[in-house]
Image 1 (cartoon, rainbow, N blue to C red):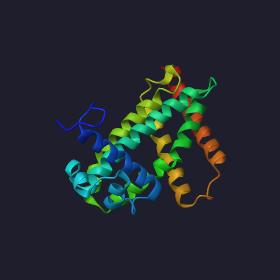
Image 2 (cartoon, one colour):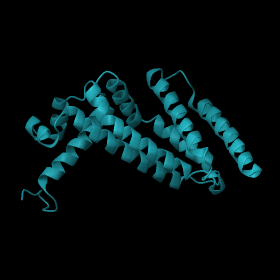
Image 3 (cartoon, rainbow, N blue to C red):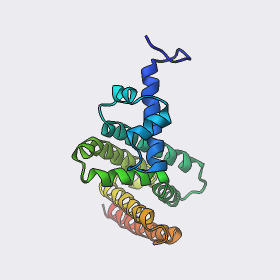
Image 4 (cartoon, rainbow, N blue to C red):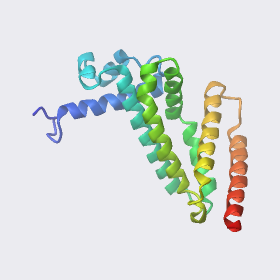
Amino acid sequence: MDVDVEGKRPRGIRTKKKLVAVAIDALVEDGYVRATTTNIVARAGVSQGALFKHFSSKNELLAAALAELFTSLRQEFRERLNTKSGPDRVAVGLEVLWALCHSPKLTAAFELYLAARTDEDLSARIHPVMLAHRAASVEQAIAVFPPQIQAHPGLPALVAAMINMVQGAALVSSVLPNSTAAPQGLDVMERFVRGELSRLLEDLDAV
């Protein structure tokens, strides 16, 4: 079996993981248009043949890169949340979510979303990745809220709306960087979430 220099795993697995990591870097640093297969293989130090040995197309590679990018964002959310102090986990969670949504990684994901609008193959490949990430993100965010409200049937919809609004603000900011002051936008978001939380708690009290 062809193994890497450390003899720990097949070389092909190592090459495939490297291509995914490099594709993420190309998307984040160069953008979707310039993240060509030529760019990616040059960064990875492999041939075009090696790329297409592991991925049937550029779109398959980009879908794999998006899945890995999302995994790293969720991991970063957990890590940042755990390092933030303070009893108000909702405020901390919103702050972390806001920061991550305005990060270059998610801006790169936005570019893929927009490209998929007119690319049916890319859309078909990233759609399940996006659905899985959304479900995992909502589940992750629910855990930030007070235990007494986590089982409320209305909480997933609130969390999904919260994520949509933060991502929408981030998308606008990526195109018009000076259009919205981040602290003001975050403050508006927090007021909205707290208002909806109060409504959900009232529902529970009424039961």
